[in-house]
Length: 267
Image 1: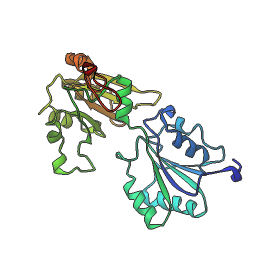
Image 2 (image 1 turned 90 degrees about the vertical axis):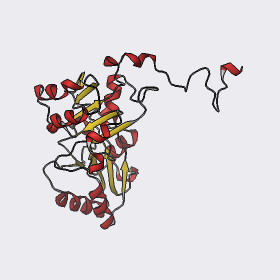
Image 3 (image 1 turned 45 degrees about the horizontal axis):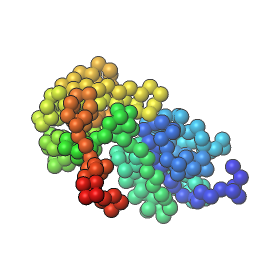
Image 4 (image 1 turned 120 degrees about the vertical axis):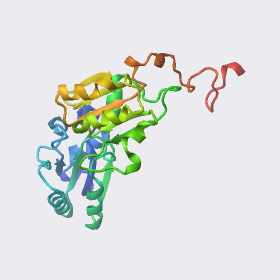
């Protein structure tokens, strides 16, 4: 790329790559990847196809085998040499991306940075399932969480206590502890509650199983799922919920008036 035509300022751009499908990158993310001098990619979680549009001369640094103490100095060094760096994370950076400690290090080093949001796996899952996770009269809350593992969780956020809400619950990073997760969920959700088991969403080998909560652990073990797996537990998943077809939002209801439309019953 001709340097005189570049508009990307030096610094670090923390970019959400989405669930894996390059077509689900935001336009801003695509522009940054196309112009960046160096791209630090979490390659164990971001598929190679995301890098198809990068510059031919862009430096690609794969970070799956590196520690924070190795990654940050490399980004800082390039930024101080007037380079534009894309730090590419899977999904959306606000969810389980470990950007908090990277941001603190960049602030301490006085390196300018920007965070670019991405589509999260739970959104991609809902789209694939052709489902709305907030159905009027059925469920109006979405909980994004994980079960405790190597990274602990606050006691107040224990999965069983969150399950008590019977919301649409999206469970990340929990395939290795699926039996424990299923047991906690069954304390509050009925055993026939629909569960979407989503493996490698957006990747070429993506798979989704729609099962009852009772089958969640068995299917996970049968399919040997241990990572890159999301569970969506929700009464809004239509295959197991006969009432979903009768639910209706007020937004487009003829009797509902708002700023842009009068109620038909008042006409």
